[in-house]
Image (cartoon, rainbow, N blue to C red):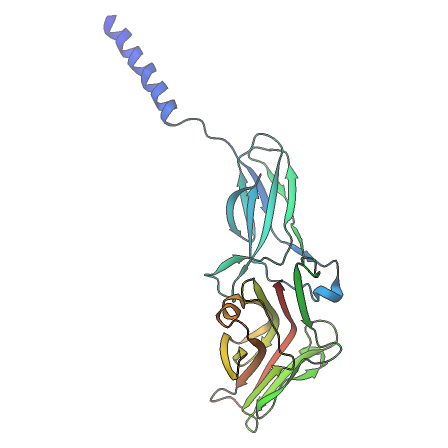
Length: 286
């Protein structure tokens, strides 16, 4: 009997020790985010609301839970009502390996009660940040009224088009067509831009192209003028969207002004080629 008592005591202590090592786990509430919505309170200032938001950065009561690729199912450990803050995430310069929070969209907030093991569906809504004299500046070219790109060098340049198959949204886009008699095309913004070298700055662009093209910055600094390549675009048969981070380039050339250059060369073996762009947008903090 003595040995039986000792055995039972050993079992009880072992069970308690197991519970101490493996305490009962909390059950999360799941926030399911299948898609997001982008709006604009001032379309004439903000321009198009086309977007390529690929991720969401999620905070619960101001604590970062992580970055989640869309569609996402976010586990939240909570016992009382709390608030999520959801920040839109993008591919910086179109690269999936450089995911970043996009600073020019507002933050979506969402309050909910805990529902352990339950799923709560939510569609975050983002807006462009307000443009005013102290915060954010916008330059928009949607090609509906004019064309801010003029010819630079080459055999041809971008011109406006309203052909239905060539227009992304609205009535007009901008098009570069190459052929065996016009194998190189180049256009640049007519305006030179003065951009901050110590604040975030992005270019947004919608594009569709059956030949590669490049986006460059033409840097005007003191008496020098030279080009800096920003990004090269592969072909796509569907309209795409890219966010180009210009902050590093602007910081590298203080006191410079910038034009933006689009160019393409007809690849070997092709007899025709086309590049379409729309909604060229510059955004920066002041």
